[in-house]
Length: 266
Ligand code: IP8
Image 1: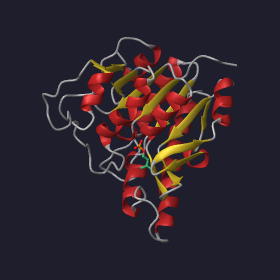
Image 2: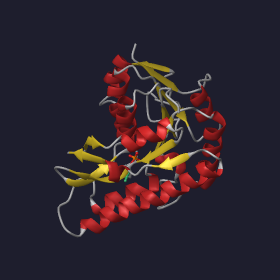
Image 3: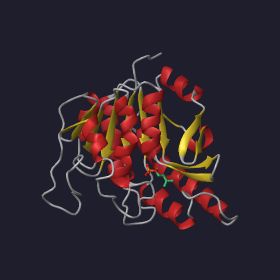
């Protein structure tokens, strides 16, 4: 039985899928990340992955984030959840093949939101999985919402929520850029990565960062940063690293020095 404080790892949807396609998984990247996770062998690891070209286009097509307005959306809710289980299946395949004792935990079956914010999480199974040395794997999902009927729950919100709830020792955010930058590194070649950001600076970023790709229904880098604030307030450090580049996630997981952004309370 393991009692160490957990590490929460988010793997961005734009890392493991091609956001320009539809249902386009990057299986070789998923495989490489599974290898890094297995090699890091972190005790008490929780993984959360994003939706990329699986969840986002489908959620957008049916207006899932905005909630239930007409019957016809119900099949869209089902489809959004389903495509996320398909992507999750690919991630699980790779993790299990690399002998990570990973067990999928379906957010829409254990979490409810209230106007988009998690207000119920049945944590018993997750805590027991961790105690027994398993690696629970969550993902951004279409979830039921007490006000909206349903909505889209981002992996980023799940990361911050679980980190706080489980008293995580750190968060590792694997994204498709080199860290938190002064300008959008996807459009501006001279963008500079902030190596270290304090909570105060993080609060100041909120509202200033560019909203990334229109296909992302949950808000891109701005959404991520906003979601992280409560976890950082609780003293949980966040390492933002480029998961598209080999070994960055591995190094962040084992606590080695790695290129990226470290966000700390003070
Ligand atoms: O990519 C969104 O999760 P995210 C999941 O972490 C869906 O924002 C269903 C679009």
